[in-house]
Image (cartoon, rainbow, N blue to C red; front, side):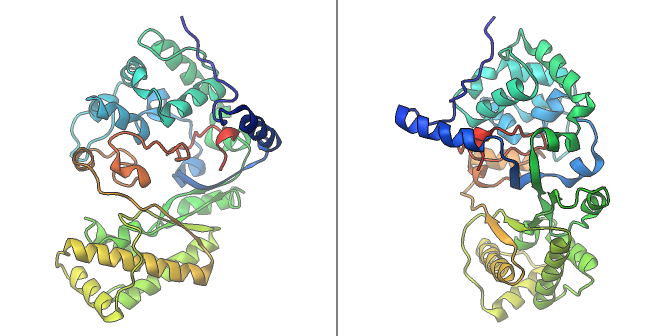
Length: 362
């Protein structure tokens, strides 16, 4: 039976001269603490500090990088437990989900996902078996035993992975209650919120009007006008700064930052808030305007902007978005155009258990 082994030089340049220089730099930096300002981690993971459920619920079901590769080869997300928007049936047996993943390990050849998964299996869980139909149960049992250990609780992993600071990703309408708990527990300077206002920037989001109402509720400001809307956003940004935020995060379809004329923005906002449906051009124009407004506000409050411009989604991606709830399909960033994971080796995993591979420090 073949074993899973990691080449210590796997992420370094191939030419010998470049590799030796890269190894020298790596050797000098590999033990430095991690500053993870773009984590895509839910704050409740650290606030509640609960054990991870099982291998499938940790590594497959919530990871769109993984299940989209499977989907690209005809394995429906339902077969690996990804919840449906319509509440339809999906596989709930985590061991079956894990077996299906291992049986299709070959599909991950040449992808960043395989690189990450191999690193996790070997370095985090001590697995030396290559995933397959024959080894699936043994690997599952090994990982299940690990996550049952208190040393694998989220807060404990901050120390194990030498994470000095990590930022979560939080909606602009988050009440930041989890961060308040983290602060009370002494983690307020280690787990920071990140302001993400996407749901308020796109007029065609199904929840846009409800989100505007929630923004008013949280900020205590009147959002019935465009000017009040902007003031409410400033107030929420100030609340995030007070909670320790250092940055904002924007997943926009385009990188357009063209500002609208004030009268046009006011009129469009009021019309859509009143119940009218926006055109595609109006949606794009308002989103571009909001990205500009966010840049202006960042100049005022100092929050660093992180922008993820997207491409036009392919038909398969539209089908997935309309059916599956899986993290990343409706809210992912630059990889959104791909029916399988992006090939950017620097992409961030969307879960708490991210092994601190120094070879991929950014």
